[in-house]
Length: 102
Image (tube, rainbow, N blue to C red; front, side):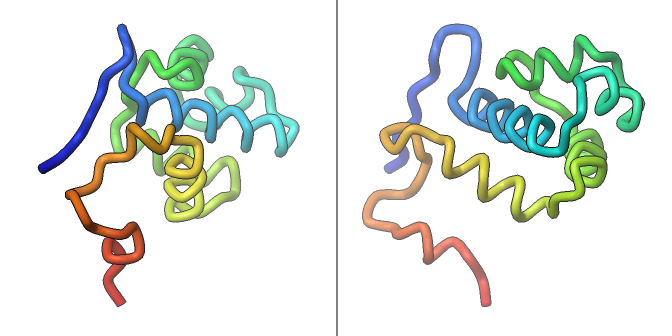
């Protein structure tokens, strides 16, 4: 059984990903315009991602991570850390450590 609750207008994963992107962008001292330029997207698209209103494609996520100089794995981990515990999608009785293949 899976549990997933959506907030009005945005999914929890979109909001968490946006927060992770914004945190990393600010840590690197980049503006939305600078990150957007490096990723080949409009500044408003980065703004919508950071607010959890857009779900970027994998290639845009890759570009964001690359230009933030963070690995895709690290960006995903940061995103998961920003997820509300009650919104994390896991099968019942499965630990997060079970999701990583060795």
